[in-house]
Image 1 (cartoon, rainbow over the protein chains, first blue to last red):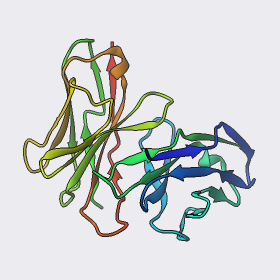
Image 2: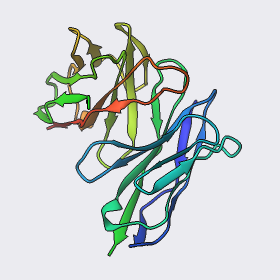
Image 3: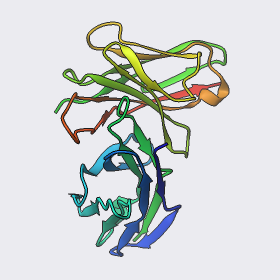
Image 4: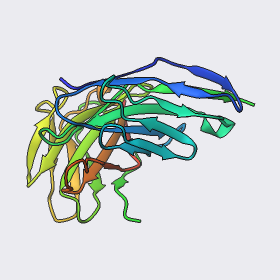
Length: 113
Length: 116
């Protein structure tokens, strides 16, 4: 079945460091890909999305490119801030059945001042 | 901007009791979902609902769970006899019919269920 694998955390960075969180997926058909962010004690917020191969999603300085050839959707940010500390979930929604969303395990990011 | 709402934000119940979690999806959406997240773990799909019936469900969604759209606005998740392991954050989501590639779901803020 469909699945999402993302790098284990936690990831600890200093402020202004470069961030990469790796994400790869397995899916039949042509899924849409997403990154969600969850701040402590809060719900899921959509960070960015891409709906087809070579699309780049971007928001708040974060970006990710839908790579069909490597089945990847890595999250990057050039300069992280303390306020970026959160858990990041990579996810896919495939065009099968009820269009359910499959989430990765989540990567916790800590940014130190 | 339209949003998915959920009530209550926190529900505490005793083991063996029935609970109903409520959601109001975005008004013109046609697909409805429940997901759960056990503390510190990943978000897991429970069930999808379309055209007044379940379109897909996971292994987690056993006979203890049921969903209903009792009127034109609410979407509920019922757990008949709660277990300790049902303690989790439950997220409701909805999606429009959409065209090719329009698979984005809109998530509610969640209901934290604590079973004691």
